[in-house]
Image (tube, rainbow, N blue to C red; front, top):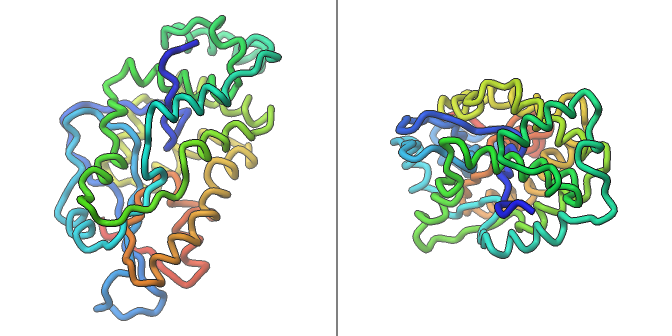
Length: 291
């Protein structure tokens, strides 16, 4: 078994590579009640995060820091991420002794590419014989990232939590709930996840997603995320759509109670017809880009 099994849950099958020491201006939106006057105070904020960055990346700026100071509550995907506990849960869910070899769980056209990704990650295919297909995809992504300039300990989410200094924090999910989303994927969806990771590892410009996030290019981010789902609507719904539907209620509760939430979740959750911006709009709230 690979020893490092914690995945990146923003884009678990996308490699996130970038140059060190860069300056970022990621996308930030303010939330307002539809029809609110131009001089009305924001009802909250939306901030698309990325779960690992190169050391030395500076993503703070005047507009973002002002929004953080103005907000009353921080809302993140996971409030208390205990890596030891997450590893235990992952391993409990990830193993199945009835599985065939991993190369038999992808289409023949992807088997050579899977072998190449395994080799680049320093992974032995024999170690994945009894690892579920979704868990293999996440593990390989993390192992490849470990060989890159990305630092999973340099997480925007965790940095925000560490800097919140005693103010209230709300977690929208637990680590176990996130892992179970993947564990409950159908066999075809798990295969699509692994094949997508293999395809992107082989074809995508390695720093494309990180560059798009750093530049605040929400359209490019959305396009790159969609590449991971291709035409598999079930996979997309499980990883993004249904989670957004679960999150929008708690977010609106904080907005409507005047708590002025700063909602910091994976950037892939913002755009699209099932994204948080669209779901808030359907409930009478607009999100306006301010950075």
